[in-house]
Image (cartoon, rainbow, N blue to C red; front, side):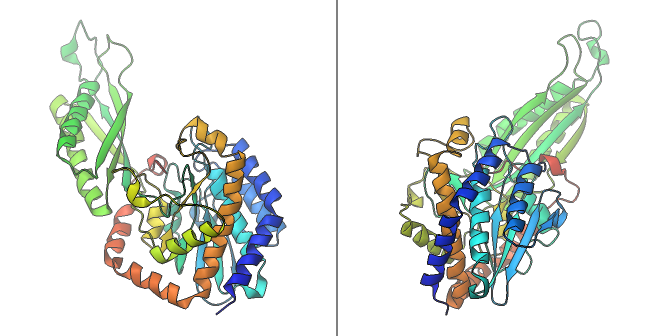
Length: 418
């Protein structure tokens, strides 16, 4: 077995030595927030850092223009380290993906500098479109996570957590097509698309009384008509549908579809239902890896909030869940702001480029690198992670099969970390 203590000290020293460069990269990505599938500046910045440090880079990797991949090491197990770097509409990096980008980059660079002492292989992946579109699921369709033994990333938050509680999510856009007419002079000549949508909305509201506590349905009307004196010809809405796992999500999606169809039948309007191409799966945490990450983070002086003390129903969604049903994975949370500051609001965006955010970049990179060393060095941990994953492998296979909809719409899927 490799001298893990010595290797961990080496990677931590290397990350400290390049901390200025890493923080500059974090701030550069933070200063130019880019939406899902359009992270050109971030991808260029990150891949440029890889090439500057002598690592091979594949751009436009695994079917996505702003994805990238790098790999190094020889023999042994293979672990993936992931970076995200897309931002939110209007509020920039209020989810702190500039920190996720930098922690992944820093960990990968430090591990690459171990040269022949690296006890395995590393696949470093740039994964776009987490906030919307399910980039990791789309990359998975091109084999991004094939052959891996583990995968890991770390996400900013107001507290340190061993994992992020996650449930599944699917997004759906419904459009009703009616017939316009003068709403006063000849309403009988029209077919009211808004009536169809309101009927469906009310049906969903009634459905919400009879779903599981772990399930959620919430949406907004994005188009309701053009003027009160015109019978609305087109009406449109977007809904998020959530459930604890993929099988329950599939069943709930059918019930929601029935509500949409009922609106069309009641009004006479045509209905177009467009589901996302990629559903986000629940997070299947590999606890051997998560415990190692927590221990390494505690060595850096970080305390962890007990998962059992989180408020009931406190859960988000992320496409890292899709990875976790393919390979043993972790998605811990790292404190990058005060505990009262929650992600997805403008205040968190400010903290993502603060001293606390910068410290999270460095500590997160160290914790990931050290956890990778633990895993690659310890065949017993690898076996334990593999055995734990296998206990629900059949369920995971069914979940993965349900997560990708070839006929779905790529641009509307997701709601990452939310």
